[in-house]
Each structure stands twice: as C-alpha cells, then as structure tokens.
Amino acid sequence: MPNLYAVTQQDVMSFTKHAEALPQGGDYEHVVSQSALSGVYSEKVITAPHYQIRDIRAEFSQTLKVDFEDSRMEDYVNLCMCMAGTEYEIRFDSSKIRSRLQASRYHFNYIPDSRYQLVLPQKVRTVHLAMNRDYYTNLLDTFEIPTTDLQKNLRREEPFNSGPIHAGTAMKNIFVDLFSTPLTGKIKELYVESKVMEIVALQVGEKLTVGKNLQALRKKDRDTFHDLKTYLDHALTEEHSLKSLSTQFGLNEFKLKKGFRELFGTSVFDYLLDQRLALGKSLLQEGGFRVNEVAARIGYKNANHFSTAFKQKFGLTPKDVKK
Image (cartoon, rainbow, N blue to C red; front, side):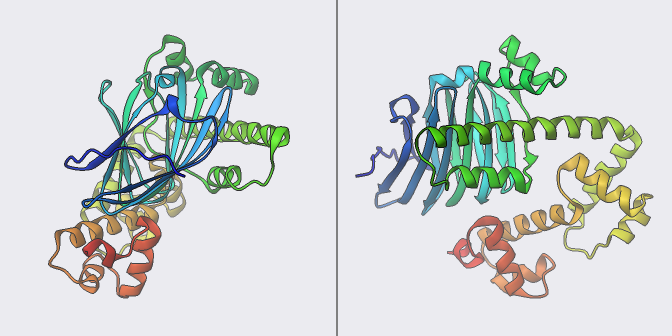
C-alpha cells in the first residue's frame, strides 16, 4: 500500500515530506485524492551511504507545492534535472535562492538549507542526485581537475548555485539507465557507483568547457550575442534564418551557432522554439483563443505541428491547457 501524506489546501495544494522518515531505497507512490485535487506523486529512490538518487514524477489536476525538510541538505551537493514536462521551480526560502528548470535543463548546487520547496506543474518528471560533500570533493580530487569556484564554496560552506544548464543526451541516458537496470545486489551497487561517477565527470566537464568558452568569447562578441537574444525575444513570431541573423549582427554563421550555444546552452532555433511554445502556453491559459489561432499567432502554419511540439515540451496537449 502506498504511503499517504496529508494535503493542506492553500493557493496551491501542498503536502510536506520529511526526507529522514523515508525507507532506505525502493519505489514509493503517494496518492492524493481530495475534492479540489487528485493525482499521483511518485518516487523511485536509490540510496547508498554517500549519495541518494530520486526519480520524481507528478501528475495532478493543478499545481502542486511540495515542502521538503531534510537535514542532510546541509552537507550535500545536489544535481537536479527536469527530464520531461513543464518548467518547475525550486525555492530555498532562507537563502532567497530560486531556480526554474525546463525540460532538458539541470542545475548543480550546494545550499546548506534543510527546508526547500518544489513547485510542480500538472505533469512533470525530475531526477535529483544528492551527494555527500566529502564524497563529491574526493571525486573531484580523483579527476585531478583545477580547483573550481564550487570547491572553494564547499570548503567555506558557502551557498553555490549554477543556474540552468543544458543537459546533453549522455547525462539524460545515464539517469534512464539507473532506474531501468535489472541488476541487483552488489553488482547493482557497483553499477550505480560507476554511473554516479559518469554524471559527475559530465557535470565537471561541462562546467570547465563552458568556463573556457566564455573566457574565449571577447566582451564585444558577448554583447553582440546578448543583443541577438534580446532581438529574438522581441521578434519571436517572425521568420528567421541563420543567414539573415548573421548579416544583421555581423557574424558568420559558424560563429553565430557556436557562440550562441556556448553562451546560452542551446541553439538559436531551439531557443526560438522554447520561447514560442512558452508564449503559446500563456495565450492558451489566458483564454479567448482557439488552438489553431494560437498556433498561427506564434508562427506555426500547421496546428498539428504546434500540438505535437507543445506536448513534447510540456507533457500536455494544447487542449489540456485550455480546460
């Protein structure tokens, strides 16, 4: 029988989980059913002496706020990734740190705060890797990498938050493999340990690469890319091509593609797609527009193509959002 947690009715529905009270590993499903809210919040948990990995899925009739209380947070570094669904928010109220993650984005942080919140949309899947601080720093020593700002913060016990980072296919596949492996016992322990090391290697490699790339971009070029991004934000529904953007901003196409990805963690057209879909969702939530009208307003000639892209990003169809 699944563990049940009391639901407190607020502006958004919420329930509190005390992480210390959870059993050490396994699958958990928390079913909530009230007149104002129905749905499922489920977790798969892998626990080891120095780390814990959670696969969290929520599917509710409305926004869900989950209040966590976990004293281990004071000595753990964390990697959280949105695997699928709509953007969700993480709030660390005492340190005033907030972070929003869209699908295929992750953040990495050390925030010694035992209380935090997840504000989850109607449907989302997220994974969370929490590692003991000493375990993580020992891994970094094993990799023999230069000292990073994060390591300095860990030594001083000061908060650190990376902000959203684009997650590559390799990292996403590791989390999928972790929760689908048929291995058991000691073999599984070794397998999971190796995957955790792979995740850290990818995270550290991404951080070092991004840092070097940003240093390599001249200030003038960085300003140009920020101007380009601002232009795209104000011209979301217009037709764009790499050639026209290159001409307009004085960059060759290769430099435009490479520099934009290095600075913002995504391609020009993936960025445009994300922003157009976010605008489409906002229009649907406001009401007053049919799906085909919204599709046309954000630049889609085919409403079916809009619906397909919308569901891939948000985990819901446009009609679901209009309800």
